Image (cartoon, rainbow, N blue to C red):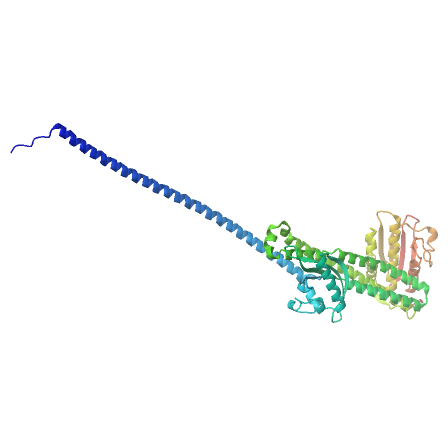
Amino acid sequence: MQPAEPPAPADLVASLTARLAAAEQAIMARDKTIQALVAREKDRTAKRHSTMEENAALQQIVASKTLELEAQNRKLEQTTNALRETSALLEMLLKNTPAYIYFKDDHSRFVRFSQSLLKASGQVDAAQVIGKTDFDFFVESHARETFLDEQHILRTGEPLVGKTEKMQYLDGRIQWMLTTKMPWKNKDGEIIGTAGISSDLTAIKTTEAELETAHKQLVDASRQAGMAEVATSVLHNVGNVLNSVNVSATLVTDQVRRSKVASVGKLAVLLEQHRDDLAGYLTNDPKGQIIPAYLARLAEELAKEQTSIMTELDGLQNNIDHIKDIVAMQQSYAKTSGVVQTVALTDLIEDALRMNTGSFIRHDIEIVRDYQSKPTVSLDKNKVLQTLVNLVRNAQHACDESGRADKQVIIKITSTESLATITLTDNGIGIPVENLTRIFAHGFTTRKYGHGFGLHSSALAAKEIGGSLTARSDGPGHGATFILSLPVKPEAHSS
């Protein structure tokens, strides 16, 4: 068998060329496949990167929102706490204030009010007052007057400030009040009712009535006694006490008129206007943010006002009691002698000073107490108190007329087994030597508006209880000293 004949070179080249072309096509196809795979992987990688970036962005958004929500929660918690604190303070104020605070709708019906008003109404449950009007608690005349006042405020928007009202309840009780009312507006500024606050003036009015009664009793007693000299001396002493009464009454009235209580009503109206968004108002509004601290300060100021007013009212009552004692003493002149009582001499001096505290403060006079002994004496205390009040007032006038800056009154007490001595020394205008024997005479005075009864009646009173009243001075500009000597035990003597 013959071996195959090898292909011709041209055929071999053609075959190789074909095979090379096929290989190139295969390589190109493979390259395209690889490129497609690379491109697809790149696309996948890009998508993965995009997803990661989106996830990272989403995580940032979530973190940011979480922080924002946490901040909002903290702010909401602060707002809630502030709201609770403000609400608690307001409730405490409405629960404890002695003033009557109230809100009424446009038909003058009670909507909200203080505990003091609920108690005054005679009701136990607030539901028994809500929706009621003044006609349900007061006589027709007073209820009609308050209704007209409130309707005027609703029409005009003008507040009613500092009106003195006599309130008569249906059960016969009577109260005197100092009332302030104002329009109650909603958050849009529309008037939806009235808000009011009333402070009790009954104690002042009662004191004024007692004072008037005491004055009438004094006039009657003086007329019955038929003793012009005694009557004028008593009137002088009453006049001294009346000066203190007038000062105290004026101070109380001024304090009531300047009272911070009116601020409670305004604050309540302000809170009511923002009732729908009270939390936001208390937290975000600059005015709302200061309300909690303001309420705390207001409560403190109201407590101070109440303490101050009660102190003045106690002084008023003490002065009224002293006037009654003077009237009783005047009546005793026409009947029997005074009742002997055992008292501490320092107590009588302090009472006399207390009745003139206002004068000493106004005239900047220093009181120095030098109680070297504190004896207890048995005597008619009303006559001693009358004398001490006259001497204290006399020293106050002497210091005031001197014009000096360091005005001073020294009160000294010394005693023995049988005698107690009160020495009252002032650094006032002094007494001329020629007047030392005349100052105790009836009608003698060197003061422009004096009447010459005080020292005369004091000397008589000291003599009537077995004591004496003398004076000494080194002359004008050197002050004066008055010495009141009193028996420790009562002695038999003629009046």
